[in-house]
Length: 349
Image (cartoon, rainbow, N blue to C red; front, side, top):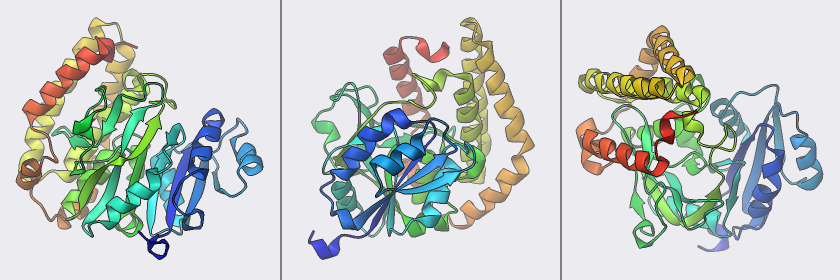
């Protein structure tokens, strides 16, 4: 790439009382090899009360700040950030991350290599264990969620190959701004969780691709907002369960929705039994509430489904063949692998 070929990039960082993370995150952005006049950083603050905004104004005056009146989660703040972004491409970046010097340059190289690429996924390593993968792309599951490729595995040559993937982790993903706006941005009814799977899914459904870029390296303090192992907390259990149901209903072909709902209900029943065995009744209630709210909002979800299906370019069969959607067997195998990694903690508080 020569200097004239560097497109303007907008990096959007959503923050809610994350002051303790901001110095490292923004220092790493300030030190990027990408030309400084070719990217902007926008902090979208969710009504923080920890002095985050004041700190950024004083320490990083070059950062644009968009202040919201309260905590809107992850989806709406990113959408608001994209609305004011000036870049041809936007990067959605978590505040609890540190990015390598070449990170942005490599993401941009990836998206410029193929006009059909709408999103680029980073190689995400753990902040505290920097030779361990948190996510190297991912696959979408039939129940509307997804799993990160390589989660909990040692980094190595097999994660150093450029390849197409189902979705990129929302902690650090580049997306074409026009495409993001054309699909309506993130679904704000999600609040948080599952939006990354929805984005990747729509990228493929609309005839585009998602590229995993192994040279775009970043480090993530997993679940710093919700707490360690946040997927096991009742609030996150509710969001994950409900938003999976939204995803599969909106994005699968009609002939496959009933089957997916059956598998989803069976899996959630299995999880509920495990939670009860652990005495985690709050999470059992969260799963029940997620289903009630899904049913309550079903008509609204169906309206969104019509838009997605109208723009569909690839069939479910083709997405399975491409490896975008994982088979049930793959999903069960991954669930078992993760259970071994977590050693039973999946069902605990």
